[in-house]
Image 1: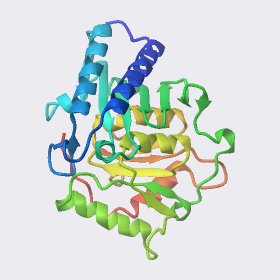
Image 2: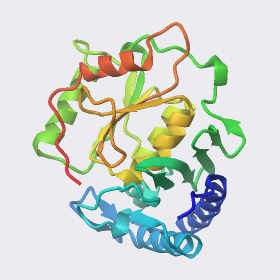
Image 3: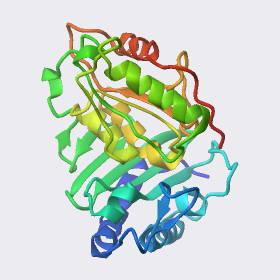
Image 4: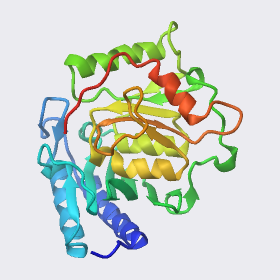
Length: 292
C-alpha cells in the first residue's frame, strides 16, 4: 500500500467536515427524541448515525484500503492498529447538541502506526475549523496558525494560574467516578492547587483544540475514546502542546488508551510542560481503570 498523501487527505477531510456540518445544522434534535447507549448521560441521535454513514461512505469511496474506526459502528474490544485508519466521531458533544448548546464538533483523523497524522475538528455552529498535518503546524480556519498568541504565548508558573478543562463523563459511579470527584476537589480547593477555574464544556475534541489555541491551559480526562481525541491530539501537538497519561507516571499514552492530560505550548519564564504535568499528577487521587 503506498504512503498516504497527507495534504490530499487533509483537504478531503475538510470537505467532508463541511458537508457533515450542514447535516448537523439542519437537524432539530431534542432530549425527547434522542436515545441512550450506556446510560442517560451517554446519548445518541439519528444525526450521529447519519453523519457517520455519510463520512464512512465518502472515505471508503476515496480510500477503500484504509480501515475505519467510528463511534457509532465500533465493535467493543477493537484496538487501533498500525494500518492507515480513519478515526471518526460524527458528533462530539451529543449532549450539547440535543440541548441546543453550540459547543459541538465533528472530529476526523487519519492515524498511521497508531499515531494521528492528519486531524480536522469542525464546529458547525461557530464555523471554527481546526486542522493539522503532521510536521506542518496547526491552523484555525486554514490560515491562522496556532497557538493564537504565536510567539507571545504566556508562561504558566503553575496550576494556581491555570484554566483547566475537565469533564464529568458518562461513568457516574465506582472507581473512575471517585477518581474524578476527588481530583476535582484537589484542583479547586483552598487546600489544594486552587486553579483559576475549571471548565466542563462537553466536547473532548474541542477541548483539545482549546488547549492548542491557548484559550485553555490544560485538559484532563479519562473515559473518552480514540475518536474523541485523535484529531485534537495532533492539532495540539502541532501547536507545540504535550499529551501525557491522565494517570500519574505515564509519558507515552496511547491514542486509544482512554486517559489523557493535554498541556498548551508554554512561553519562557514559567514551568516547562513536564513540570506542569507532574504538578497536576500530584493532585490526582487514585488511578483510572478503563478498558477498550
